[in-house]
Length: 104
Image (cartoon, rainbow, N blue to C red):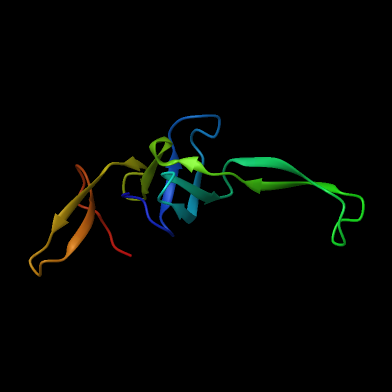
């Protein structure tokens, strides 16, 4: 997967289209990601010690990686990624069509 933890992304399809956020968890098996501040869902919680009457919580739900693009601050839009091997033999992520690298 070309999107990693702590990357800034922009949502390109679905009900959250146009929203930006930071990836804080990646699920490789499902090809989904959790993004801070994007794709909130409501979850009901049963009665417990923490919630004696039960409650409704809002939390982030996973988004499929095909619905997001890496955000490039240089272009102020989402970009595709290609891998480039530099002079030292290191593999780096580069925005296609722009001379901008994403190093973690």
